Length: 328
Ligand SMILES: Nc1nc2c(ncn2[C@@H]2O[C@H](COP(=O)(O)OP(=O)(O)OP(=O)(O)O)[C@@H](O)[C@H]2O)c(=O)[nH]1
Ligand SMILES: [Mg+2]
Image (cartoon, rainbow, N blue to C red; front, side, top):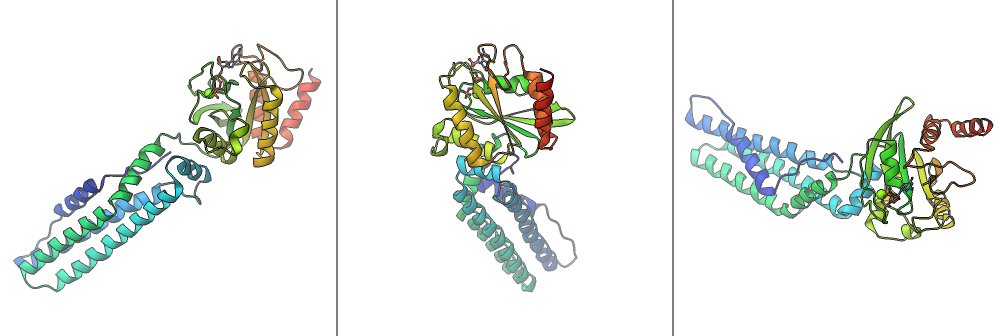
């Protein structure tokens, strides 16, 4: 995910005061000069705080902007706390702008150098205590931006989400289909996060997403891995490529795996659900599209099917299937 770089509260204070120290002001009258310079310093602080905090406020996922990112943010850092901390930062920004403007107006009305310095120093003190008061929320955003940055930048549109039970060969297939490099192991629950890869299919750049394995618990579970997979299935899948291991070497029966496919369809109504059998080098089902990531068998056929689905014509897959049947 693309996220703002959130600084620590102390670094933000340093940055604001540095912005203030760079300001200059001319003039012959020493009092007028000190006054103008102090006002500019406060405006510099207010401008820099506005830019910094605004980037935090707009840079994090929001429910309105991107439902997938919002759901992932909820899983990894908690949406309520995220909302609260962004709200707090918003308040901090407004307070700094209001207070620096008000003190700048007071400075403009002051006639003595000592009063100007006193007001300027009080502004610095207020700004730093306002930022410290939001310290916990700023630090939370700092942690959240680091954690969420690890999630690949996934976009809606021309997206194929590969889902299925654990160990059915999802990761090996995405490596076959795209430039994604992911761990493949002979035991379940190898993939714990969402993995992205790309490839041209026809004239389209298609995004493939490999998910952690799903089981029949997926709808009730609070398990973070399965919930990441559900978020991708729910919000990103133009095509839901559901992999069923016909050889059952994954440890789950074909019946069990197919049942979950139908449950996912009835729960999330993906636009284009596509059931594909994996490990066809071990066992070929009697009907249906079957691939082997070991021998490459069926991969070209699968890509043509995806091409037909992603063209956006609902009939694409039907005409492709009928062509396939007539050609034997
Ligand atoms: N014979 C054969 N074995 C395969 C094929 N695809 C995957 N495997 C094997 O199946 C096992 C699981 O493969 P993965 O790609 O890690 O499966 P996964 O679905 O990503 O598993 P999780 O990430 O744990 O959910 C590995 O031992 C692979 O070598 C295939 O087409 N043929
Ligand atoms: Mg995997």
